Length: 251
Image 1 (tube, helix red, strand yellow):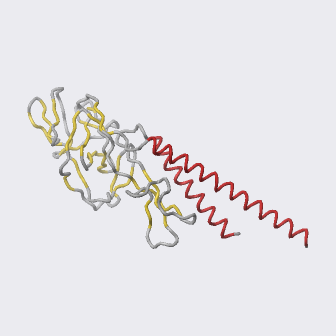
Image 2 (cartoon, helix red, strand yellow):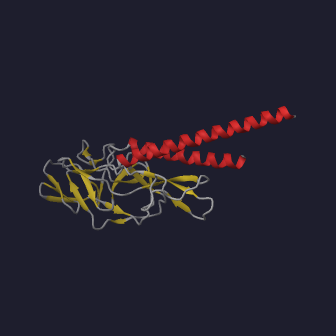
Image 3 (cartoon, rainbow, N blue to C red):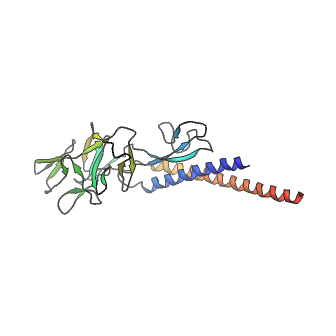
């Protein structure tokens, strides 16, 4: 009975963690540059972790995960979101693999969220007021007559002033999430490389890569699974109580 309860509780924890991750994905459907998460597990009869949400299997549970599988953590799906035209010249999107670099008090952060603006000094900044970095450092745009080409070169009044700094890393990306669709390095000693084969799209933003219909379908599936585990736990508890009471009467 104890083993059975252990298996059921483990399965329930799996469903609970999946539900938390799905709920967070759903809440960020409209967050620009957001990258959805999935859960990975440690399988009791395998020596390596199995990731749910791979190319073959998704968080819906199609991968071979037993009830005794324990949730280990989450991993981020870095696939690109759709690009949306805004007509705002300060909005920038990346068509390809790579990240904008943003200067913060804690160091450089990396993001695909390109709805930038200008501060009072004319410095290109994120919506949080953090400077966006160019190859030469902070980018100053002191005229409404400016243009950003596909290579990220910035021209102000016809003069080139800088190039948007776009960094890429070896995959799997050595990045972890921080606030506002941004990422930091897992290891500060890692250095990225200048992104290649990437195009900057001025007047566009990248949307969240979360698939609404898929997330809703998976959430329903997880809720049903979680409810089933709860019912089984209650049934096992009832059986245990009945056994104790009957043994007590026989004694």
